Length: 186
Image 1 (tube, helix red, strand yellow):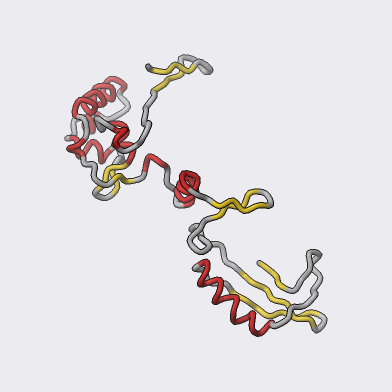
Image 2: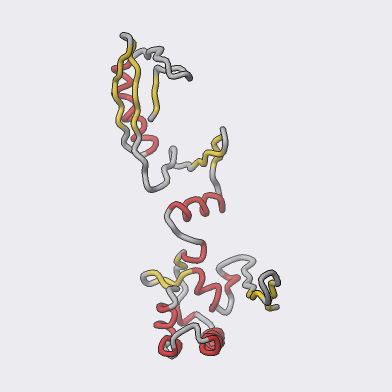
């Protein structure tokens, strides 16, 4: 809720041109933000003020195509990877769940998939029937596809040259030897 015509203490001080603002504000907000707001004329002690009601939106809203994040008393313009992280978080996605056009199961390294199957069988963390599936079905059962695309995780884990898609890509696998001793597999 936003008020125009009230001071910082909440006291009504009035607003000029209320009738024009009642018409202009909803149109400008729609044009600049792409959202619909409810603007109401209110009065107290014969002074007019405006009440602007904005329903919460489940998705991020840009201002003239630019996204901002409120940080303390400032607005931070989001760009590059910060914008990517913000949008993915708002849409419930993670970096590795994003589809990668142009990569197919046939592009994946069969030796890497074979090693995965061997390790999965040894650890008994996957059902034997899943391990024996063909590559297409295995990748699908591992939830590494979205529609007709492979996800970034599939390319990072099983492509012979993941750096082709992700500059500086590297995978490190670790395990805890005890509650506090992390061991990295070199």
